[in-house]
Length: 295
Image 1 (cartoon, rainbow, N blue to C red):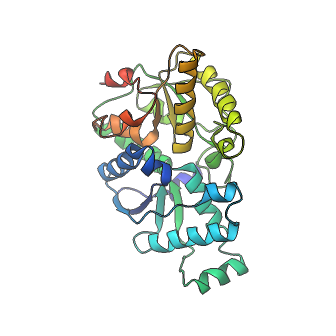
Image 2 (cartoon, rainbow, N blue to C red):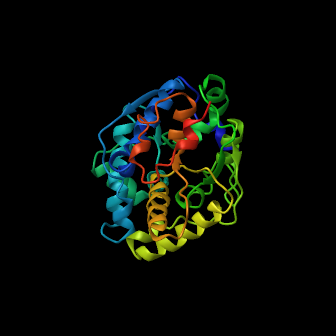
């Protein structure tokens, strides 16, 4: 985990880029990220929201150069506040880092110069899951609750583990840091057969039925092991597991739902934040009774 040393310590300034799903569908993710980072001692800045445009590029509605230019604008604005951009979305993380890797391309540099955008080489794009994981000992020390007795199935997400294997703070093939986060806060990480497979959410842009089938396969794998909650680090993955479970329970294909929670929300719960403030009521899978018993 050599890259963990690149994650700033508390007291550092961070520019938070939430992403569209964190703001518009699950606003509790954005709120919990801001509150958790502040509790951990970071100075957090939140700028004007501009979509990173990854969905538009994926379906061919926007050329890559336009998408990279938009991301260059985001980073140029962010650098006025901090050289560390932190996002709670795997897709935004991937897209912003794609743009960073284009900075050495002469044609792209020419384009950013024409747009009068300044993106210094020392800027870094981080995932909030990395920051929270680095602070897990502090979270355990000051936390008001722990995860004792909670069986947690983790899902990492393709746009984090596979899009930039050189940046992952853990093994690309078998990441463990979410499981370690769970364990160090008293929970029981669950190993399940479909752990490394995709949630299916990217397929919704092309063939929606594939999302249902991929997510269903993972959900059944986790459900068979008496999992209490599904822990994710990406709002899009949360959306897939949330909606598909809601469909499956209504179709009678499963007899219980497993609440899906973002790592920022789980950290917020451990730190004593109110579950309603964390936006858990906005989730379709609202069976959070096991979480209410956390001590």
